[in-house]
Image 1 (cartoon, rainbow, N blue to C red):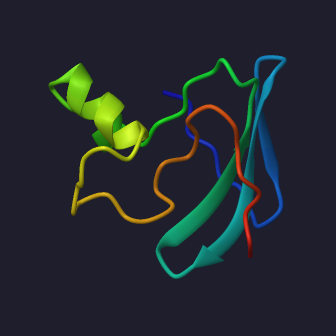
Image 2: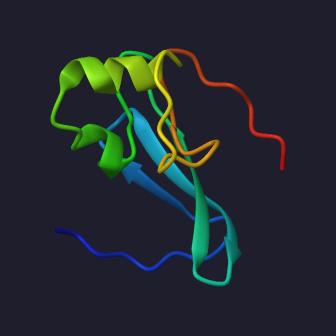
Length: 85
């Protein structure tokens, strides 16, 4: 595992097509932005680790509720909506 320290506004590049930008830091919470091609699936770890793929798909498409998933926690599914910060 590569471990990096980044400050607000700094960017990490992954390969040729993925960038991760530190958008804000508030206490122990860091907001990041991820730019990638639409075919790249980007999920929070707790969504990726769901045992049932159909549950994961339901969350991605709003068919199931998941109290543990915070609004805005899903980074991308298909197209990306601009952040309102």
